[in-house]
Length: 279
Image (cartoon, rainbow, N blue to C red; front, top):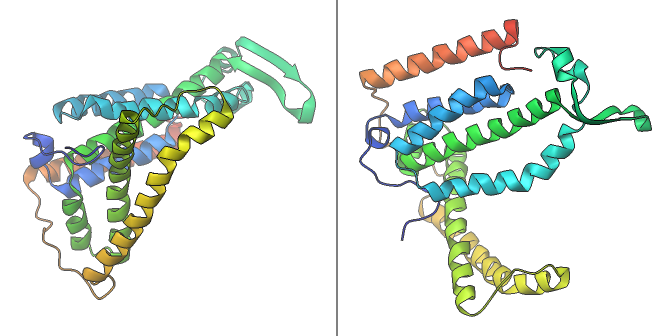
């Protein structure tokens, strides 16, 4: 059975046609720029390119349910922050008159908060927040599905990254999909026994979560022991590890890396001098 949110073996250009270093540079560039941009007009093209590449890489569609679930969980805090963005002075690129156009606002005097609610500007700000999150997750899913941790670790070792840092990345990279799969297995097993979490009663919800919480906690304790034994067997901290993958790049890798770095530098300069990506 395939593991949720982990590398998948597929015969695509994105899996075997690019060096791991190339994919790492592209992914971290997109993630960094998405963290700086808030304008949907800049984020949307990057998001759509990520979706197209996921389609080429045959990333399972059910993985995107994780993104939708996370968006749903963060929607309320995002909306709460959105109502505080009604002040047109916050917007340095958008037309202030357009950004201040009211949809549903109220003037408050408490703590000097001023105008709260929804305006064209605040809704645009919220759309940018959502698009930023979706962009990072989309490219993250692409990176996970096309790049095995073995290749990532060896590339980092070839770059002389310290072993403790690589080990932490390895554990994190593998822990999340492993826990996701384990929780799915436990849920399926409990459902076969007639377990159901759906209820509006808080006390019943707590009691019904115990059959799920207990095996997860026990399994997490076992994982800690397994990780401890694994670190001892592998001689963690005993010395520098010899990488099994070199940094020899093909021409297409060099072209993609060069284009990515030029794009990154141009984006940073445009952000500094022309507020590109800001609202």
